[in-house]
Structures are given as structure tokens and as C-alpha cells.
Length: 75
Image (cartoon, rainbow, N blue to C red; front, side, top):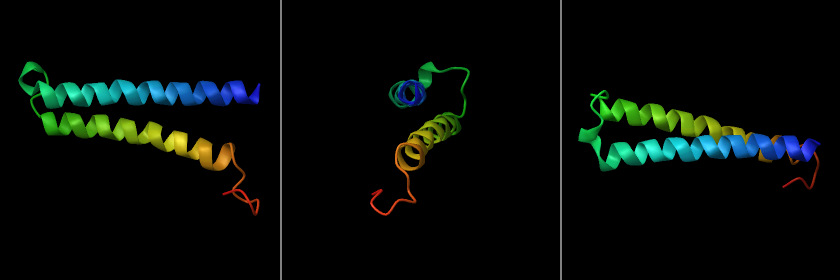
């Protein structure tokens, strides 16, 4: 059960990362086509913040949940 929960959390984070990377690519490749976003740079920064959030979640799972950082050979 533990592994299923971790797999679901990781899949959720990876899905959000892919979604927001796609948004960034749209902004970069077609900025004039996004009429409701007058500040493209600010919009991209918001997308990057979300990507960073989910990337951090993946790193925390990897570092602190899947491995025990307090064990001597945890690296």
C-alpha cells in the first residue's frame, strides 16, 4: 500500500509538471496568441513556480521518504 501511495503522489506531481511545461512552451512559441495574458514573462514565472513546487515534492519523496537520510548508507 505504501508504494501505491508513493507512486500516485509521484504520478500526480509529474502530471502537473508536464502540464505546466506545456503551458510555458505555448507562451514561448506563440506569445501573441495568448490574448488574456498581457504580461507573458509574469505568466511564465507563475508556471515555473508551479513546476518548482512539484519538482520539490518529487525530491522530498526521493530524499526523505523513499530513503532514510539518517541511516549511514542512505546515499
